[in-house]
Image 1: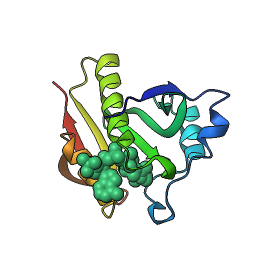
Image 2: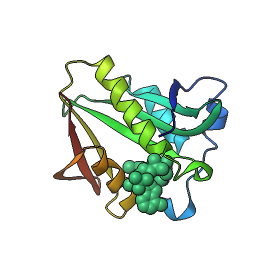
Image 3: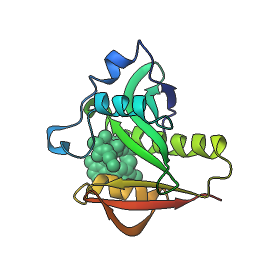
Image 4: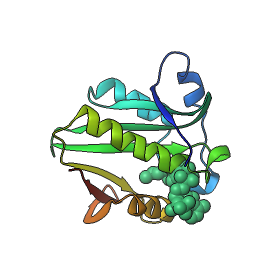
Amino acid sequence: MPVVRLQPVDEDSFYHVIKLKIRPEQKGFVADNVFSIAEAKVHSTFVPLAIYADQTLVGFTMYGFDPDAQERWIIRLMIDQAFQGQGYGRAATLEAVRRIRKEFPDCGELFLSFEPENKNAESLYLSLGFQHTGRVEEGELVMRLALE
Ligand SMILES: CC(C)(COP(=O)(O)OP(=O)(O)OC[C@H]1O[C@@H](n2cnc3c(N)ncnc32)[C@H](O)[C@@H]1OP(=O)(O)O)[C@@H](O)C(=O)NCCC(=O)NCCS
């Protein structure tokens, strides 16, 4: 599996992160990165991160805390269309989970969601140990990973 680094989006990477693109047929699977970064400006727990393989920017992810449900979530994940299918999505998800475990050692569970037709995302998350919860939120299926 490739090694990836998650780096806070900063004044330099911002302009590159907002240009990352998914495939046309994936439209609707993830919010625009510029929207996610704007959300992070108003939600103090949201952490927007650029995904790098060596020095190459390959994607974007964001995690955060939902104070109403008292749940920690991986809120976004996208890999640029040019870099999909090379293991970066898997590596970035594992790295986000590792980072969340380290930052929040008392966190017992982690959530994420995806559009029902997004089979690639579903198989990725299932293979990493996330389990279906049966919950549907804003049309998306919610999965949970137990963190021990
Ligand atoms: C979903 C996404 C993040 C996966 O990232 P990726 O780097 O392409 O995925 P990886 O190469 O790490 O593959 C990991 C797993 O995803 C699944 N997967 C990814 N691409 C796939 C494809 N074309 N066909 C089938 N399964 C696929 C597989 O389970 C794969 O595991 P495998 O290689 O052992 O079969 C990426 O395709 C993406 O950005 N999609 C558009 C945005 C999106 O859907 N984000 C998720 C929102 S919840």
